[in-house]
Image (tube, rainbow, N blue to C red):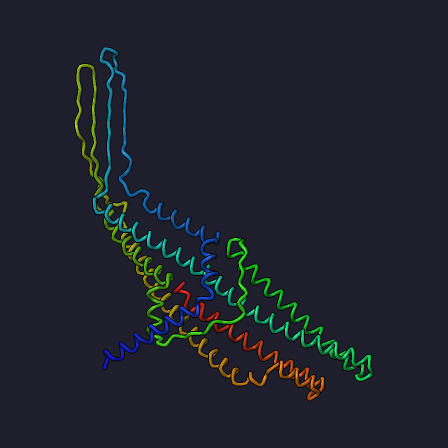
Length: 395
């Protein structure tokens, strides 16, 4: 029975992932262009590469030391003495092991930080696309409203000339047209702002995105599996895990650095008629220099671990909250869809032209219809903004 449930869950997740991928195809060309052209993303890549290079600096032993001395003899008959010394210091071998392991995990951390920065840029681009879809749809709605208002205003102008309408009704029709045109202009300005933001994200390169219809909204079918996917793939959580790993390896490196340093070298003493030379060996005993460092590193690792646990809990709570908000919006949109068929603007317009509605009733019904459609578009926009954040780990 348990195996059967797992199979069903896996099938549902596969179907969900397929539906989600299809629904995101409208954004894919835009995001691919931005990933190629974004100057900010290019800067993040260069910064990550620089950090990786820095992590592998200083892993070799210290530079060798060369010393030379020339001593005059007193009296002069003694002759000069020349001293030469070459010395190379080494850490205990385990220090180099842990330095390289620490550098490797820091490389991973830099890559996770880059991926997180990339995710945020692409998320901003996707959410701008969503706002642009909404703006395009609102512009189309307002343009249709303005066109109907223009037809009504022109009709009342003709009726005024023929003496079939009074000035009050003509003024009301003209005011309706002015209001509709102002709403259209405002919607077009918002659309242009979204286009400018998208162009800026694309490194200044113009992007054409005229979509005016939202893709199908797909919510998780299995909350636990979705949260598990987030935990496994989200770069911010990966960065948190990496920071904890860095702190743990720093403890081991600090502990290794408490072991003795040693040196090997050559020393020569040259006096007229005599030469003394040979190999030298030295040992540095870290008795006082590292006092408290291991404890400090261990406490720091514990603090990083606690901070990581807090971040994971916060993100889990955040994602659950996003899912609940998305579910409420889906229910709200479904409720709107059950009443929107009665808000047919074209049907109202035809009824008005046929004389079935007075101007006052028509303007009122038209306003209600337009407001209902705009509210539904706004709810869809909010829903897709939430979905973009919920699935940002897939970017």
